[in-house]
Image 1 (tube, one colour):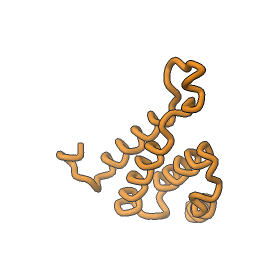
Image 2 (cartoon, rainbow, N blue to C red):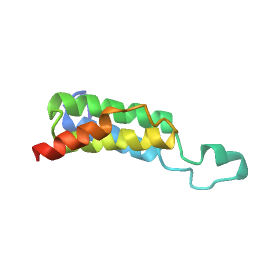
Image 3 (tube, rainbow, N blue to C red):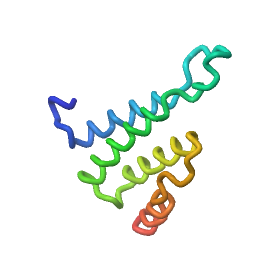
Length: 101
């Protein structure tokens, strides 16, 4: 998609979001040695969701419901990482979008 549609196409944003979702998943078989990584690659998921957010902000705007979903995804990953202050705009953004809708 990147070569065909470009870096800032909404479908490219969806691809980044899908990759982020996959990276949040735990490995299919968890051994005791893997317990510390049971949540998957959260740093990688965070990076993909941030790419997605950048594209959605540029193409859809800050008040679009899809942009709100991406903020939620970032917030969920940061919460799983134990970073409750990492994305403070998430709750405010959701309430602002809700008031627009």
